[in-house]
Image 1: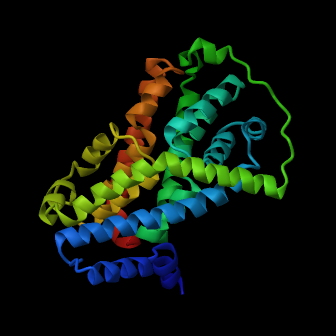
Image 2 (image 1 turned 120 degrees about the vertical axis):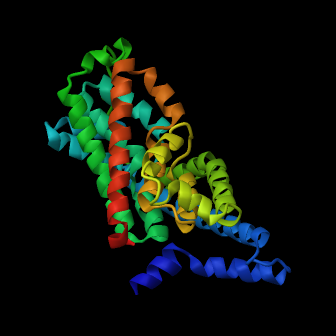
Image 3 (image 1 turned 180 degrees about the horizontal axis):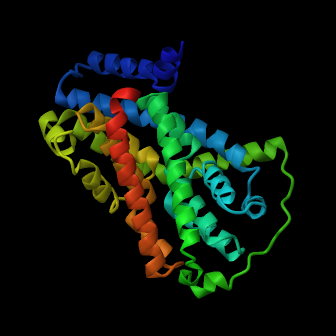
Length: 331
């Protein structure tokens, strides 16, 4: 029953077969490079956008219970590592990319929340969310998805805790430290209001991520059907001990969210790349993209920005090698 749910419901393999039959009826050989690329592109694009719409609707409905002011009040009740854990968990219900999380980070910091707590939220928000859990489960299986989310939360908690211990409050730009957010009362929403809000989030998010999904699926189709398997294995397989570090560095200049990186990761894994290499690439793209680093620089000084990037990069690389070591246990 679980295999059926994972393959046919989450993975939508029935759709892949249907598209293959349709392309075959049109005279296109789906076992060839061109036909295989078209099938991969159509199947992954439709699957990701359908799952994306459902997930964003669900997560945004949940998120309607956690507006920024309420989130700040929740976080303000906790101290120490417990606050970092709560911040990382709250980041899971924020289905946005890193650039969308930075304004919330600025608001939380201006409200006087501990710096380490706000960084735990900033790390976990783009790296792990409920959407990534389901999408990863649909492709890599539940073990990989669960471990990915757990280690992502661990990185967020450890990263925020280290930043808190280093006492870097003076590395936040003055206009952020001196800012004060207004504690506005939250209007109590009814069910219809929450559904309306969630649907607006679906439309807005779909418009925002669709170009990155199309680009990601296009790259995935190229890797899956045109790049020789031995090239991928040589560069990102077990024979290259620097594959994880290389994938992490390659992901930083890119800008996408997890919905755009999953088809690339799927194609790389199918071609023989190690699991840790693939997941390190995904984490680097979603957490340390160059545009988000540029935005974050407006709020923090270079020293704190460098420490944040170093903590995330080291954590991602360590996680990558960890996944490589246990790949045979979870796939």
